[in-house]
Image (tube, helix red, strand yellow):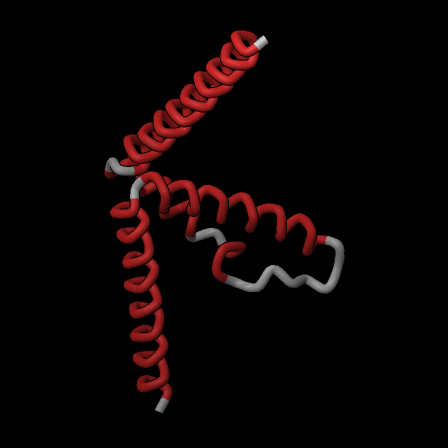
Length: 114
């Protein structure tokens, strides 16, 4: 009977190791994909969707659709942050730079109106 329990324990351990290897392989694929110039451009386009940073409130049932999109995009960003922190940091710096540019443009427009 002990041999059967040990065999089940060994099978469970092997399955757990395979699951870990699969997850690590997946994260490597994510890092390889989004760590390239092309991948970063795609990632930035995904992250620039209005659903990520802006309010999703619509006052009607469309909020559920918007929420689903926002959740999915955030899931992608969470995966990238885990798989490749450097790429995620790059993406966040791009967002900061975009906000700075928006602010600068708004300030310039306000000066011209005066």
